Image (tube, rainbow, N blue to C red; front, side):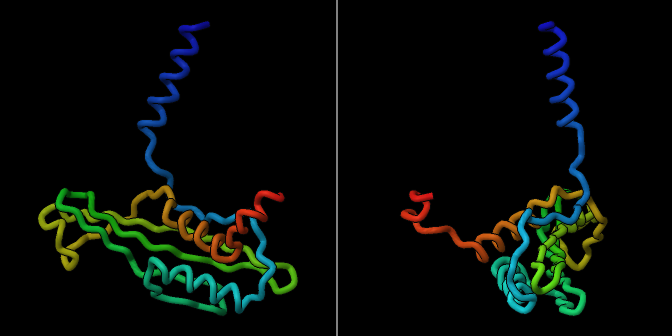
Length: 154
């Protein structure tokens, strides 16, 4: 039994090490916000402005897209750029869900990887951590922590 458990453990570890990050997917918080659409739209943009520049905001579609956050690197194929797309879904009275997806691209220009003008971008997989950070920040903005006394009572 012991050798089988060791082989199973090693297989899981090696499988995890060799797997590539998954592509971005829409993520959401397991929360339906009972605010108005105008309030939610404003709060999404305010939270994004804390760390991003907004490239496009289409209120009719409920979609906000950020500018690319470019992070060039001196080593080939290590330069990346990221952006977030946020989606507001729902109706007044029923509540709203906020979804976010992260896009990532890598710089494939090996000759001059530090030149943003000469960068050649190719889509790459991402784990979605920046989208998660945005969603957590928005949740904290909309549901701030209670005072320590109130937490003690709960």
